[in-house]
Length: 186
Image (cartoon, rainbow, N blue to C red; front, top):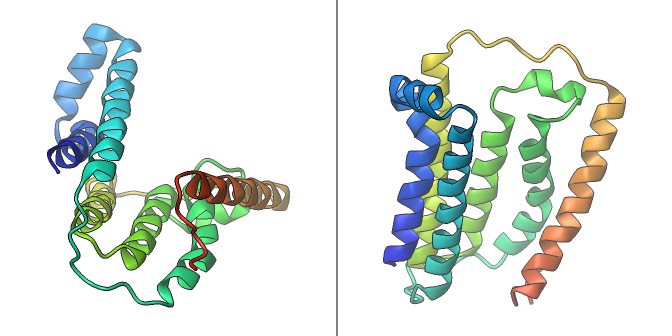
């Protein structure tokens, strides 16, 4: 469980560092230039590797029994979770309606996985992701209270987002099968 927790700590620290220590982040960027982005990318990559290794190595300790219908709800709501995650970088006209769509998508993705995984490692991992994403939104809102909605976008951008989301849904499903997990239950 130590690898999982260590990876989660790295993930959270690397993401919130800019928000809670803006002067230190600016100083690092001043010293390293654009290479500072590489440092944070490397830390995030390391955090993901540790999270995956730690999660896969964690013992199965049941905390609750997931509802049988949960898998069907996950299958249905993963499409909007993926779409929300991509919305913030899209040219969709829907983007103007929501602040932090990527973080909301991440929150939904995590909550859905928490619905169908009732073991301790899942509770720690997905719960941490939910708390981090919600806290990150709060930190951003505190530092940048005046939100300016996106003023671009088009129907073509929304269609492109839907197609990319569908492709990613298929890829993510294939990855689950490759890992030995049937995302559609059974």
